[in-house]
Length: 148
Image (cartoon, rainbow, N blue to C red; front, side, top):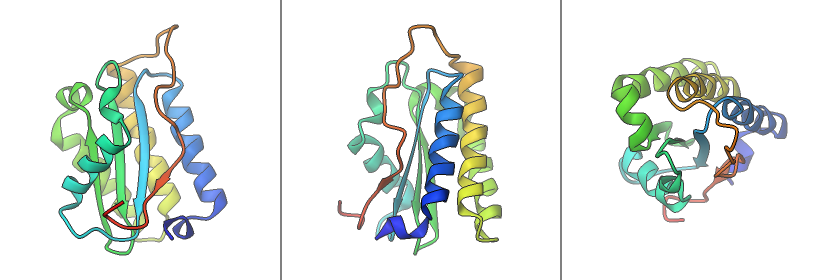
């Protein structure tokens, strides 16, 4: 099961990074982990993005970090509101940041670092509003296979 890829402490670190990143923005960040993926990881990440209801954020500023651990594949999907602001090169930079940590076996640190950078961009373009509500769950979601 995918949960076995991260210790309880690693999961807590990642969720804490999401909570911290979201404190100063109206944006939403999710992490989804599966063992394998049989289609293009970006296409699968988009499927998961919609299955988690991430397109429903008011300002279209949801970001999903997707990992297929056994296949060593990853993708980042930013909804149209944030993607229009940062462009594809930002997502590629964050993928490279994660990969540099993943190669050293630092999965939680890599994810947390990317979450922090995404949070900074969200904060710049979608600052926290006094009436902001947490629109999406901050917990890591796990899939048993690409068909879930």
